[in-house]
Structures are given as structure tokens and as C-alpha cells.
Image (cartoon, rainbow, N blue to C red; front, side, top):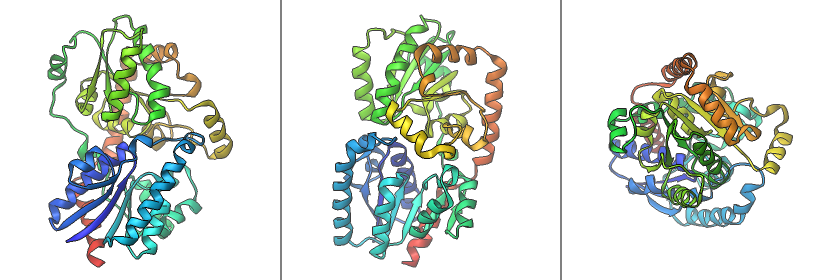
Length: 382
């Protein structure tokens, strides 16, 4: 039986990794999995050594809070990799943590696969991309531009389509969803996705809750928790939020059903924006860094800073859906933007058309099956 070490340190990465493990097990039953992850990977039978998903963060200052924990985790994992022979090392997203660990795995003679690689191709540099390509025996690209970028640098990349294109779906009809949660068929439904990271919940959730109070019953809202940790945090804040309106519910494990049933979504930037695009539900993306981190990021990135933060806009190089970052993320401004978008039928139709085009670009058949086959091909050479 061959052993694979798989590592995901963010909630979205955990979900992507779990789907890949599922596809791998279908093609080869003689595989065992160990590594880092959370609820989704554990459900697939992976032996989880550490769960770092609740420590996931972005920015400059914020990760420093978890630096000691990350360094301890790296030291522990390096020791574990030295003592236990693995036939393959596979990491998902999480560049800052995974590149050093992948490099160490490679030094031990393990083939290295990167799934959902660092976004050097999108806003980084060729030099940064070469570091990724040099460490990896295989990069499973999820965007055509990413694939071309790494191939040009001499990296071994495969592109079979975006895995979300066959993952993002629901069998729950919008009317059934509304009846289940006793939602009005007459009122517009707004789904709120405040994110899965601690800082996202801290910076975005209070603003989104305040925004619901401004609706005064004109719209109805559902807040969707990304994982059990987020559910606890959201429920705790909701209980303490005096302005919280009764016309709002907190949901868990109904992400795609809520997205499909909603008239519009307000969410943090990230994977959720692409999921909404694939489902065809109009979306407003928001993000708010702590002021110091935002200032430092602007100074460090300079002209390299991406103009847009939401993936559908970044991939198109223009705003095909509204997004607001930093100063624009206030309850009054967001509610004004929500109404301006939601009740503009022409604008809503345009967003849906743009999302349909993006879906066609990224969709393919048997994406996960082909990705699993690429991993097994590399594994077979070991």
C-alpha cells in the first residue's frame, strides 16, 4: 500500500483536497493518506496530524500572531516526514507554509505535487513562479493562464479544467430551500458569506450584520458558516448583536443550496466568488484588512497590487461584478450598493451573462478523475 502525505491549511483547501482524495481512492484502493487538514479530509478517512485551518489568515501583521505555531508545526512535520517514508507529498494552496515544507519533502526524495498553486501567475513574478516550478514534480493547474505560466517557466503542469466546475452544484430547488427555512417567496433573499478566516469574521461579520438591520424587513438574509468553527463564532456574535434583525438565519452545510436560492450574495473575496459565478448567482465581493496590514501591503506590492480582488474580476481584467475593499466596506455603503445592484434588472442580467461565459471557459468533463490520474501517474514512477 502506497502512502500519500497531503496537506491543506485553509478551509477551501481542505475541501479541494478531500475531493481529490475521493477521486484517488476510486481509481486506486491501495492508498493511505496522512497529513494536515480539517473536517472534509477527516471525513474522507485521512489521518489528520494537525488542523491549522482556524489559524488561516492573510495580510502582513496578522500571520505574525501565529508564527510560533506555524514554526512549531513545520518542525514537527519535518521530523515526521524524516521518520515516516511517504511515496508522495501533495500540498494544496497555502504558499507561505507549504513551499518550505514541499522543499523539505523533495530533499528527502519524495515526489512533490502542488494543487492550487501560489498565484504567482496572477499577481506575482516569474522569479516567484520558478521557485514553485523548481520544487514541484507536478503542478495541477486550475486555470489555463496558470498552466501556460508554469509551462513557460519549464515547470511540469497539467490543466484539466477547474475542479469547482464539477463540484459546485445542488439538487435543492430554490423554492424547496425557502420552504424548508420558512423564507418568504415574495421577498428578495440575500445570502451572506463572511468567510472562513478569523480576521474575516472579525472584520466583515459585524459590518454585514449591521447592514441587515438597515433593510428594515425589505429583504431577508441568511448567513452561511464555512465550517463548525465559523458557525460557533457567527452564532456568538449574532447573540450579542443588538441590531440583529429577526429576518435573518444562520446556516451550516448548505452552502450551494443557499447560493442557488439567493437572489444575490454578499461575500468575502476568495473561492466563494468563483463558486457563485459557476452557480450563476450575482454577487458583491467585500474585504477589509486591518489598517496597518492594508498600508503595508500597498507599500510592498506597489504597482504589482492587483486592481481587483474578486476572482471573476481578476480573471477578466475588469469589473464584471461589484466589489468593495477597505474604506468602502461600511454598512450604509454596502446596503446602498446592494439595493443599487439587486433592483437593477439590467445589471443583474449582465452579471449572470458574464458568469455564464466564465463558467464555459473553466468547465470540463471528469476534471477530478483526470487530476487523480495525473497524481497516480507520478506515483507510479516512484
